[in-house]
Image 1 (spheres, rainbow, N blue to C red):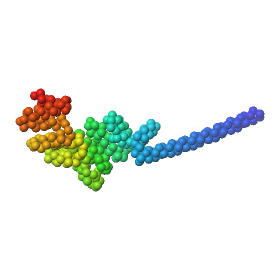
Image 2 (image 1 turned 60 degrees about the vertical axis):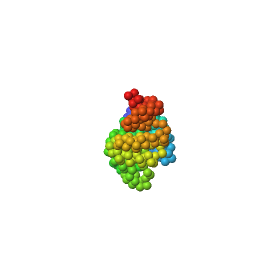
Image 3 (image 1 turned 60 degrees about the horizontal axis):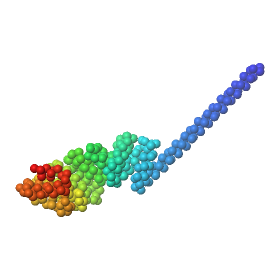
Length: 320
């Protein structure tokens, strides 16, 4: 009897302990779940606040602060689409504000890295601004990347993304890959008020755009059209470097069409407006040599070498 009673009491104690352990386990699991929910809610709220702060900074134009904050947050959230796009966009804005070419390329590389990674996070085309900024970033990366610039700018264009400078960058990118037909087509859109990617009240085309269009038409051997854009560029530009480039190309066009006085006038205008220029003197020498005046030609080539001792064509002419 005693043995049976002790066994019964032992069993009751065991069951009681098991029940207590089970209850404690349930309570512990409940606490863990509750704390996990609270941590998740806190993390989500903190993330939401961080994104709101970044959005506010973007509206204020604080691109350097956005660049640093988004980079820090990407260390714990490396595939967050919002952070990647904002980091890439801020990198591009910082790149175009730089003067030093090394700094420009460093920010351009950061932009491309971030936005290419952002594209991996989205199915389908995603935000067309990503393609648009990527295209411009690849254009600034250099001529070796112009095909990538064309690829992403075309993707933005085909998605009907509207940006005033998209056709201009597309034209420049096509010109860099020597596709001058598509370059001219894109530039035509850039020039058309109310056309694709342009507002009805768009400003007059820039002198750089006019020069770029002229170069594409000259590459297509459409001299008359190229000349018309260059004349327009010379009439409107206030940039001395662009004026020199435009006049040199105009002189080449006039010379090859047999208009020697027209070519001479362009080279002399360069020297009058901007001072000594080795290439202008060299081209004057070429005109005088072709016209049967070797003495005058050699005088111009000597001036070219004095201005630029490394001017190979002028040195070659003098050694003949």
